[in-house]
Image 1 (cartoon, rainbow, N blue to C red):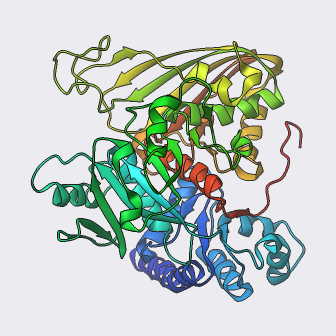
Image 2: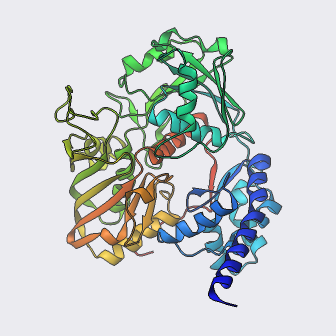
Image 3: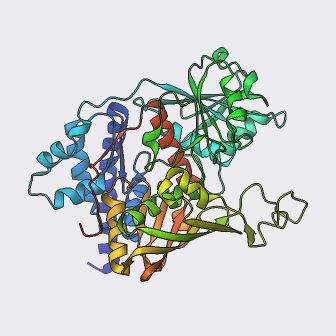
Length: 482
């Protein structure tokens, strides 16, 4: 058999294995509310080719090569075990079984014990106030989570009417995205009821410019969490206007909050969310990207001081071409220039991680890319660091620790920013770029400032609703020398 024929047979074998996974992945979600992933890359809704690709992708991003037949065996065993609502990382379960002396069924019964009989919370109505870059990505994630009872129900979006065919244009923007690709499924409109229908989820479009004036109960929406992604109001006084509306119970802001509002970075301080917190914020994309990494470094080495330089993709508040702008430098063309800008991310870290208060400074450079940013962390440590040891520690943190939903790790000489579009993690440490010189280190952290941040917002939303699923395999304590 020639090499071409052998390669073709190998591809067909992998494709056949992937085809056998699809009904198992779908059944686990529909019947048991089990979400499966490979190192954070969701499997639900992928085609056979997509499943093969995601196996190759995680290997290219520095993880161990994962044979498809191992994935299939674990999925079949999970399906037979029938756990309850949970988020299961199949790749980590494969790795865990490889290092175990137990048969697969026995290993999974032990590893997935916390999910046996687990149920989701009662459904919580969610309203998106605003439907821009973050709002539409939140909608995509919420719609993908629908089915089997995720505990979160996207019921409505609130926008200001932009044109006579506003409804059609909003639906089109949900369906097509220049950065994140086409919506996975069907998007239609019901003009009579002013609803967008996405994969069977009916989303009421409400037109209003005043949060307090909306009567959500008129649409059957009660005790809702309003996710304000407009950034128009950032203090308690302004955001409290949402609470004046009928049918609203709580508010989540997708931006750094001002005053005494809790700024939550999931994985760091989400355990401080109380049932009587009426308004909280999910901080910024940069704060979410760097705080988990800083937490891990501080625990292992101690941070004396540091500077955060974020190389950030341009955003909608900049001008496409030179024109007047009230902000410094932001009037110059975003697509033609690197623009020095301010960032409050370094100070905001202390809102979630008080032990770093006063230790960090920060600055930003906006660059001509539409998504995925890079934070460069210049840190002075209490204890000396050696590059290989530091990288190994961060790699293990990304795989096993309490921060594994927030931190990813990659070692590849070929990855560039677009390789991280669609990452579910808050930040990805680029191990090959790490510099360590005794007590001075430089870390490079990639982050999808749109999708990765939106995933963090959803996690905070799930905590607020009491519907955050159990994440397995169970995390374990990771130390520098473990």
